[in-house]
Image (cartoon, rainbow, N blue to C red; front, side, top):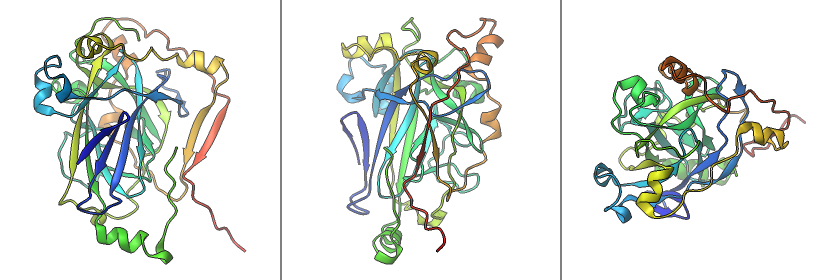
Length: 327
């Protein structure tokens, strides 16, 4: 079961365990410079508003009624990150335009351990983009479908789906009880806290600037997941102009540039979990053209607001675990 509450998607599996819940929100953020330098984590600038597709059946694109799910607005070339909050472990599959954001392979509902095509929450507190290296992602950036920028178009040659697809599998109840409800086995988890020019209404996610971020290996073991139950949601993306046409509301104001943010002396972030190993990233995703590279290849010149920045104020975040050390 999926519930939309306060601009968050909540996946619930009461038939598995009363605590089997996971909250997912989509965060506005700075678009990083796309200059092949790696940057730390940018800040969250608030949630994207989420709406039920079924509530706007008369105004959304007709194909969306088949997909169901929810939708959100993004400006062209705006960036996002996905925030996860839960205590009950879950395996999540994340795709953009039905391309797996971890492996670059075509969407399939099954969990695959090698190469791992899912992330594990709450070990993974967030995901900012396509996994292209052991500690690197390329930021999720919204671009119009049909112009060749999206990961979907670059890997499949088609502009068919766009948006995001999310599929959740809960941990098996007996595994959870044995590992987390027995006092001697308890483990500490701490959930972490462009302009509106016309474009086709549906948006896909393209690879943007490089960011230092690890996507972690499954630390629980593949057999821990209850693959007999699952829940999925299609997250559609509208450009800012069409969002007002569909909903009658204005989208949030455009975010500041990364240069403006850095000039103001505001903090960036780095997250570490020393007890977890990182995935190596997908070669197919690493080979995609970033939005800046694709724009040059298309003969459209260089991307605006793409100057390199110096991020001197970096706040280090951990996963909340306490190291015992030696006595």
